[in-house]
Length: 184
Ligand SMILES: Nc1ncnc2c1ncn2[C@@H]1O[C@H](COP(=O)(O)OP(=O)(O)OP(=O)(O)O)[C@@H](O)[C@H]1O
Image (cartoon, protein in one colour):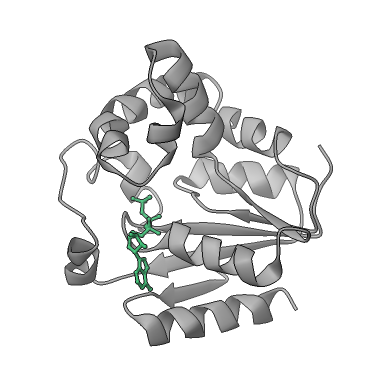
């Protein structure tokens, strides 16, 4: 694995806008210099193969993903129990060689631990949004998902390099500026 100069690790509750901000960052920084790394990439790939599902639909931000989210969590937890770094390692192994990796879906303390032990020049970023805004973006409380470790494990993590609100356009633009400053 060829290591990048900087790695941004993004975390946030469902529909806080992690993906939205990561995609905007990628378009500003440019595909020559960065790529988005999704820990859920190899996870979804393997889950789709094992369960005979459509990988493209699983990767998209639609109802198909939500329909399978609970099963994916249960299934992937079994793999993580045996090897906590399994999906982080797989995602990094298949990531492109770029100056900057934007990891869009850090969900657990064990994800952070794996990156700290295996990579350097990390910045930890927490994206937040109000419940009302997340609801407007399509969030509906789902038992087994929103109260699961995958969604809550980092709620009490206190060592973010930066915490950024993403409730509206102004906040999102400020967030992008702050992130660019972090890696300048
Ligand atoms: N600042 C914003 N302005 C307008 N729309 C936004 C903003 N942030 C996010 N959204 C929209 O909200 C929806 C959810 O955002 P996104 O998929 O990035 O959330 P997420 O945190 O990655 O969620 P999940 O964990 O469920 O994948 C998307 O349709 C996205 O376009």
